[in-house]
Length: 391
Image (cartoon, rainbow, N blue to C red):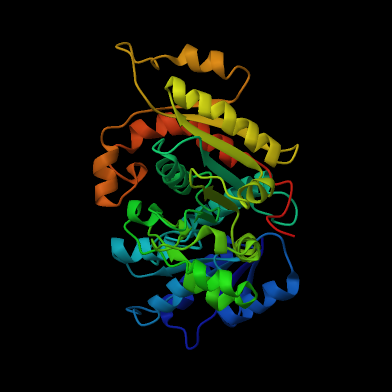
């Protein structure tokens, strides 16, 4: 992991002093004339690990802050930016670190603070390499509802929020792809605007380039990206499968972890998307009719997926006994014997969370929900990709 000190000219006395302390504390520190030079160096080097670029800002420099935020959002996957300067506000710090591509240290602090940021970045890079296969192919997880009303979208959103907030996975690029093109509500849960123009994409999938892809992407403050269509009467029958191929191919170039939210209805392309997935999570609630639907959905998912497909079943909205155990858990275990099961308790605060457009994992009830979702999130985090999303 190369480390660059980006020189600015002319440098003030404070900048020169900070840079001298950094050079003394970091023996392998290389100099670069600009951030563009670091970008070009990484492009030529074709490295698997990301570089670190350190910039010491002059006193009172506020003019370039937005430029650094944009740089972190654009290049954060390949170049981790460390800014050293005056104190910044909490809102500015949140903007800087939001996409996981940058951090900040005080110019008055000891170089040990910068060394700790570098060490943490290296640990996160090592942890990421341990779960990502060679070639950087994304892990794709299909969340398939066994019936309507089982909370499939809620589980997708909360799982993504937990993974993005956990220190071991926060550096991974995570997105949600919502395949409900008529009644999508993922963005409602995140108080965001859906931007995927599925009719436009379906009519000319060959036009999908980086610019159009960017226009389809919804960015959330949590660092999660969403691809969801505004609610419309789009005809499922008119969807060109090549449009999904183009979309997922582009997604595969930008993300490490892709969570796919399916509608309850089964379409001709459903099996094809499942076949390109590394895991399938079937969502349900603990009722006899729904458990019957789970077994049917399970058979369909297994028939659609590859032999390597990992499968889990998430029983959502579970009731608790007086002693805190899951009510009727043995019934589920008997019906779904030998399956990987995840039990998530019913949370009354979920309604308020949805109304506010904020995941529970990012609110006051995060600690309680984290305990329930941790096994499911761990399952998702530890998956390894066995194929590309699309050929």
